[in-house]
Picture (cartoon, rainbow, N blue to C red):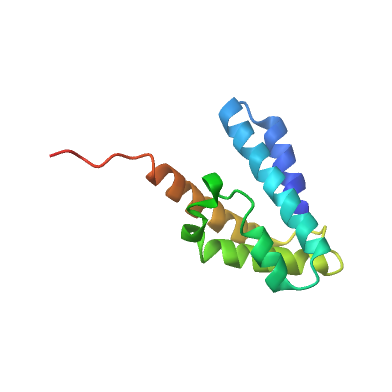
Length: 117
């Protein structure tokens, strides 16, 4: 998956240890998505397994990432199982960007404290 290669390059250039660690964790998840897509014979089985890759801590809030996670997994599955899956896929990148934004919103949102007025 070209997206994984792009993220590896970004991690190598990253100067922030925190950002580099987040990239490495995402690379690990994407590698698992890639392997699952190659090993699962159908999308339903793939999706079931791919939803539980630690997208949130203990996957307790992963359901909050839909529909972005579902859309990303659908495109990732199609990308990996079709010939030329290592080619750049703008749709996959756009789906990843949407998922990443949603996940950061959920994760950062859970850290915020309500105002005590």
